[in-house]
Image 1: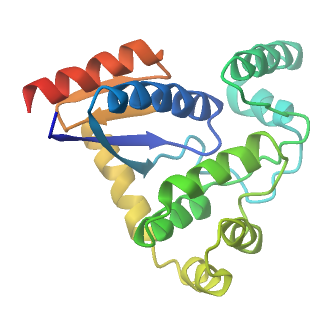
Image 2 (image 1 turned 90 degrees about the vertical axis):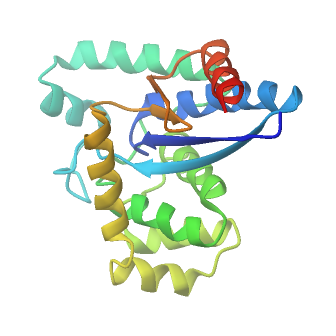
Length: 216
């Protein structure tokens, strides 16, 4: 297989299924590459709740009760099931420590790190910080700290985020997602030919990668 399969992934850092989907895709990509395939991955911006304040006053349960109109007990059961599901992928979700926030700056950071060739590393750091470590991912200083933890220049990150250098890129991603008809994430666009919605199992994702390579 000489053709590199391009995979564009629309996701939101605040989406628990997106981190799970990332792990499942990584498993599929590893199998694909072990068989001689090549994959190029790019993350794109999608905001599940763009009206969320940067400093949301309340827990994840409080947010979902308000945002989804569910009962607290129902939300707690849902988060418990999500935690178990994530654990099966090796992820340690901690919804009690999670700090719900607006993710537009985090998306802008992912576009900045794309220019530095570090987008995949930054996406991993953001997902883990948010879901596993209770870190805040909505404020510039906190995002700059996370970027510096993977070796990026903190001052450059602060400058890019303060001046909204990559906000047009975030908006362009959202518009492209809408043009594709994406209404939920994660959503995988493979070689601009195939669309896969949701955190599908690795076998399903591997099958689509193989089809894309065969049709190239």
